[in-house]
Length: 508
Image 1: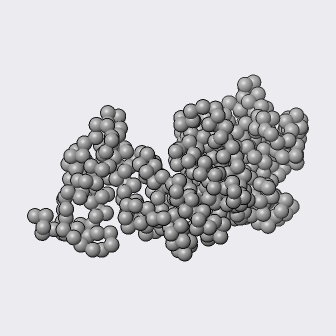
Image 2 (image 1 turned 30 degrees about the horizontal axis):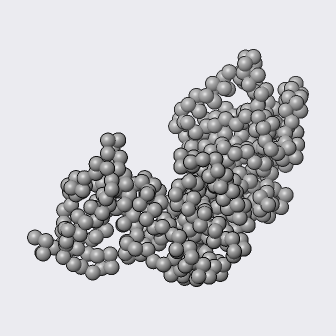
Image 3 (image 1 turned 90 degrees about the vertical axis):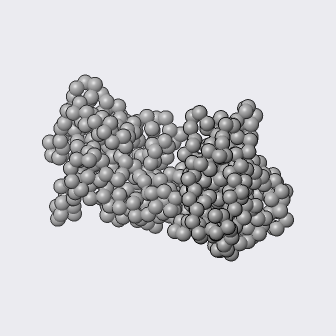
């Protein structure tokens, strides 16, 4: 039967199916692993051959079969599946299992505009040969199956339309290092590159998606988190929207401060028109966020922030739930509800909370972040001022709605803005914290943009890396890794492009 069937190779050639070749590949992937069975993988694959079947189809079936056998009892199938997948990726990238020479690979990728052309300007062929000498492609075999799928889906340079892969993991790691240390003096930089490569490829440091997917490519935007504050004018709102589109398309997650926007029914131009409120503009931000994927790596995502005392808060708290209609819901953003001590005190004392439009209460919004005594004084003053539009709700009712929506969606967060400012390295009188990022893990100062070219606005960027403490053996090693990460990230600020003047001014 075998002699009558042909397999189609990756280059289009056909040859007779050789079952022994298939067995050898699975046997190679199982070498040294505990309790895995080559025959069980082959049986699980249920391979049904037909004339002209491609080697890719055979290989993908074997990978899935091995992955389906991963269990708590036999976890080593995750490495068998990973090795089969690595074999598959290298064949896709290079047409063979053995990777090419680093310099040859870079020349090809630069010619195809997949790698940054500065690589060939910054380094000589001899330096790339030196990097090749310490590259260890066998480290590819240390990946688990889940890690290889992350590499394949997010990090390796590829054509996301055709699915073509152009590199393997060790080239990724060494070229990130080469780009980051390119401007160091030639006597020292190869040592830095080797140390950084070893730390990254041995999983001692963890790099975020923008760095893993972007450094070495012509796209020079490596901030994981971008914090954008909108003002209360159309120009400012549109500038914020433009910034969102620019940074979402460059692999960043977004934090949006939409708390300054005036409430529904507020006068515009002295009463010539009335304001449509927050929801239409939040929908505008949602459209901007979802207009692009994060560089093709993942979908755009953002968390939008507003204060609990905003006049529209009862409508804003329910924006994410599944009730209501499209006109009064903005479900594809996450939300950060901003509180301070006064809001909690009103709850504890079973008192009321007064809701205002930020445009009607001068100084209150800025004091909410920068000066708590001033905020409390102004808040009480505006509560007593009968000329100011306001609504009064029981604190327990407002907090109950917040907790119900938070529990129901899991994507409504709480930011205690007084603590963010009293525990910040920044002086709140000069650089108050008025929002956080997509994941509510950082606190950096921002300023609204008046327009896209505004040099007085500030867009905060968070560029990061992490230690994998499970692999760190002692404090001396941690110190070495700390030095590498700090030096690398510092270099990144000079290497990256800033897509708006407000982000460059805020970062340098």
